[in-house]
Image 1 (cartoon, rainbow, N blue to C red):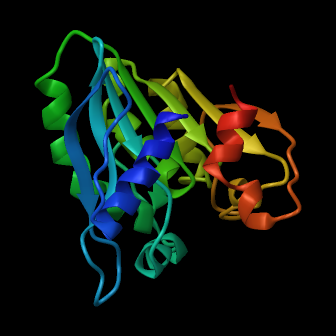
Image 2 (image 1 turned 135 degrees about the horizontal axis):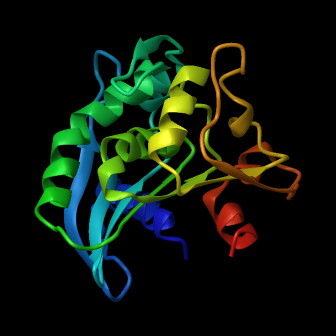
Length: 212
């Protein structure tokens, strides 16, 4: 099972009150939380940071609640410090976790940094990678929507050079937001898997199976 799928299990466990554990060999360091847009939005778990051997794993989950969709649906662009503009809703979700992520990485020097996300989680993973570029992270984006404009993509690809973007040709999410103002980042790896269901074409389990 891809480590990103454990972020889904983590979120489900929080909602149901059931226990959640990482696979053997992984040590949980930090639960990552944020509050989406919306007057009645609640603080939610969006992923975690774990240690595996000498590496730090930063993992982000996909959209779940209707408040998350409000953050997704905000297509306004705001400036990013490395250049260009990025998706405002996604960035504001990430911004609430930034200090916690940076403090963990600073406290665990010497190892590698792997950053992973699926769907909305790819926005969070991309913005995280930009902040942690000094550590030369390996970034894995599964079914990512476009995170920002072409100027941001160019600046990002200059400082983050080990970024793999997986996209199913039958999945609508990687085609969003439309390329009029938005651009993808990283090295694309395409595959085709049609299940007959729009939601299943986007599922992390499908991406896990297709990219092993």
